View 1: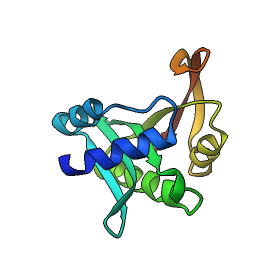
View 2: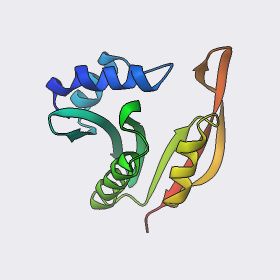
View 3: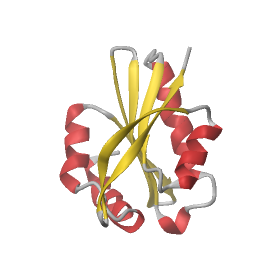
View 4: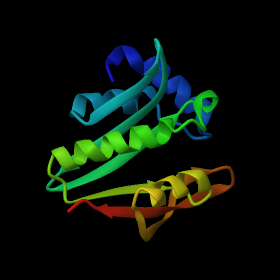
Length: 141
C-alpha cells in the first residue's frame, strides 16, 4: 500500500463496514512501518490488509475486500499473504480480533488454523452500543 492507494482503501472500508477505519488510521499505519498491502484487479484496489509484527508476535489489524469483489477467495489470498509475511519475520504466533457478528470472517480465520483464545468486551462500536471481539490466535511454529 502506498499513500496514493489510501483513498481507494478508505472507500472500500466505507462500503464494507458500518464502522470503517479512517484515512488517518491508514496513513498512521504506513508511517509506523506496518505491513500494509493492497490487492488490485487491474488498476482497481479491491482489497487490503494490515499486519503489525514485533517481539516474535504478529497482529492482523485489518483485512477487507470490497463488497463487489467478495466471494472469490480474495480475503483468503490477503490473509495467506499476511501470514507468509509473519512467518518471514519469524513471528511465532499471530493474533487478530473479529466481530462475532461476522460469521464469514470467523469461518475464514478458522479454516486457515486460527482458534478462539478469548474475548475483548465492548471492543467494537455497534449500532446499539458496543460489541465484543473474539480474540483468535494461530501458532506459526
